[in-house]
Amino acid sequence: MWSFVAQKSNKQWIWIALDADSREVVALVVGDRSQKTAQALWDALPLAYRQQAICYTDEWDAYAAVIPPEQHYPVKKDSGKTNYIERFNCTMRQRVSRLVRKTLSFSKKLANHIGAIWYFVHHYNASLSFP
Image (tube, rainbow, N blue to C red; front, side, top):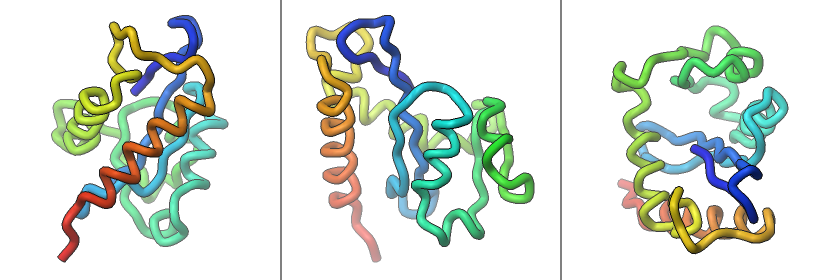
């Protein structure tokens, strides 16, 4: 998912790791679409996820360079394996006004942009009901 800071030419990609069972956001990184940012997302994952989680991603090359092959399953959107993250992206766009593509609300500073996203994510995670 992408948004921008200050001007539309300054795209910022929001990389999200979502637990499919609990729907909890377990890691989030804001940056460009590079392998370096993919590595930052992988490093932000809790150790238990890095050791044993199965990762369904789109077919972006940066994922394959970072996620171990035995844990990585690149899939197309119509496979149904990415529907939870796509639904979360829609929810986040609806609830965080600065992420709407044609908006009057936008961040002028990257730190404020990241802070608004994390504020929503913490609220979202806290609202999940765990057994």
